[in-house]
Amino acid sequence: MYWKELKDNPRLKNVFDQRAVIVRLTREFFWSQNFIETETSTAVKAPDQEPHLDPIMTKFHDENKRETVWYLQTSPEFAMKKLLGAGYEKIFQICKCFRDEEESGVTHNPEFTMIEWYRTPGAYEEIMTDTENLFKYIAEKTGVSLAKYNGCEIDMTKKWERVRVKDLWQKYIGVNLDDYLDEKKMAELVRERGYQVNEGDDFNDLFHKIFLNEIEPHIGKNNPTIVYEYPAQLAALARLCPADARYAERFELYICGLEIANCFGELTDGEAQLKRFEHEQGERVRLGKSAMPIDKELINALKCLPNAAGVALGMDRMIMLFTGARNINEVIFQTVKDQLEY
Image 1: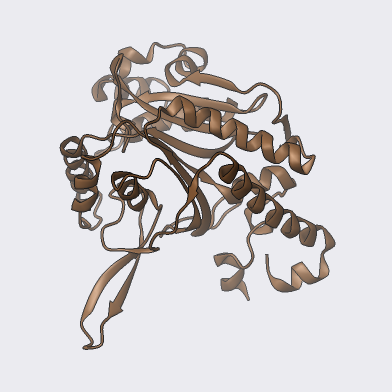
Image 2: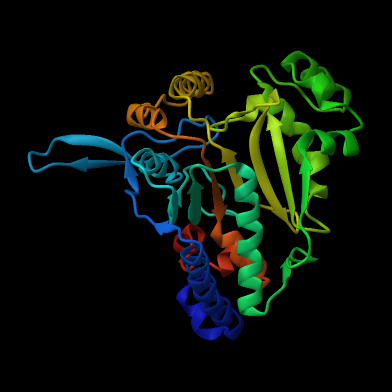
């Protein structure tokens, strides 16, 4: 959204006004639940290692012109977990996040607003309930119960659906995912369904060739839907399910087919997390990307955590749903695309 559009278009002006209300209500919701609002540094020395995320690099110079490399956060997750390690139990943060090589499209912008919150001690089922209650609180206070996007309308005040990843594979692909958790077996299934398997494709790549094309388009079209228990290979920073270590305590939220949030029952084993980071570093190198510093202080902080759970929710997308905006450009003032075009 550029300033001239905002000036000349009453509909966009109304969307921007609604954005301010939704941000305020989000804060009110967490304050009412006795969460503490936090602020952490946007520039970090050791960013997320996720192979398919690329942080924006910057450089700082001290008074003696000595140069150090920093990164703009892709998420405040690492810093907030250190706060948990310091003894905080219920925290949230609304902040700007950045991702390089991010498409500037209908639902993406390289700079975006995220809300993250964490509970410790806590289970990721509690975060599921928090997420549902947040949307229903905003719906009640604004009088907007219908989420609208891409021709889809869903009543956010009705019962939300919770479904396991493996149940979606059974429903839409007709297979028991348990039988395809091996990379070789998944590659065979991918080929059977007509997709190309490229040299270097790992389980994550193979899984998503099918998931993104044949499963995700069906999710969250009738009810807000929480998809949970992803394969362990997609655990990222989530702990493995105690009842079945082949799967991880991770969920994603879909509304009107739009992915809104990503949650982990947090891995609190520092040594296990270090091994995952080292594996991700190797994956980055394999993909021709730079291996970034590992956050050793995070590893130490994890050793101080009891059970914890946390979620990252894209506020711009949430605002799109409440306002009926057709494009993320309508809910963000001066997107990257705007500034490149003017």
